Length: 436
Ligand code: CMC
Image (cartoon, rainbow, N blue to C red; front, side, top):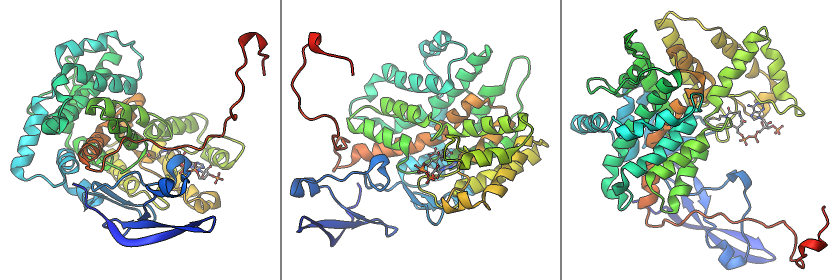
């Protein structure tokens, strides 16, 4: 249950000479907010905040983020510690359940992930009907929504079955992702195995083949665990807010997550990891003149932006990008690979961090700037980078959906608006209308 955080203090808002006292609330890390829920009822005014630049939509105990200091914590643990010391499965458990698992809890959770890894065979046939070039993000959101048709018993009283639903989703989404890749290649499916860990299983389903057995390398498993952990949650971002908003209509978990996957797809959000590599490839193929792209990004008349830079909340380094850059270097070294795109990316970062345009606007590399280079080294195709983001973000989405569902102060999400269209006017019969 979410703890009440009223401080007892109030803020006074004066409109037309009349004062309205608004309660001040405070989070556990000292964040302060003004509760405006009763403002409209008291004054007739609503607040306007397009793009939610300064609006808190809920109380949440899952993730703490300080964008000025570059701090990110899941359930009170620093993301740096978690990435260094945990597996993705442990962190998924932490996000959804609120505490790190004991050995027995981890064993049980891992067992459930193994048990639910298979897809219903009827569902496997769905893949035959998607065109070969179908975007994997589209397949993923369709398949996740379809899970509801196979497990409808989960729709009523979902919190009773939340452990099962969590394991089902986290496990099956990985199988769906790997199968969509195999289908796009026209290759036989590789089924999940109980003897492999979460990430090793995913890599094996992606890359094992009857003619070329895949050797799961420890360095790659380690890198993938870290990447997924770093994507685990990021409080009220666009896709998570989507999951909460859709779920607030009391929609089942599968449909809510499916909507979140769709939101993540956009290049301003999770789709940026693919956009970064496409941008770096283009720079490379055009002779490596990255400075021209930096200049374009600064030109207010050119819509081009440097993908992988900037963030709504971080006004300093995104702590995830620092770790991902390090993982990228470590993994490429371990695999004895070099990638000219990584060299270009590092040059862009070096130049941009000294450039007044980016300094003034606090634009730093974000989580998506280096992650695609790691996926590329692993052999994951570009159109699946955002699927990888979704695999990592899934426990966060589930945790938020569960928190929202369980909140005694839950209300359906329903923003207001300021209407700016025409005033009431007389109806015009069709024969008397002229085109505008
Ligand atoms: N390249 C060039 N200029 C930029 C960039 C960029 N990547 N990002 C922001 N700006 C400029 C922008 O033009 C604006 O300039 P001005 O004040 O002169 O009009 C200023 O910086 C503020 O930008 P904004 O669009 O008001 O900022 P926002 O908080 O609404 O947008 C963002 C955040 C992430 C959408 C944006 O920085 C962006 O488009 N970045 C590129 C896409 C990207 O990497 N997205 C991944 C985000 S992190 C992971 C995730 O959320 O999934």
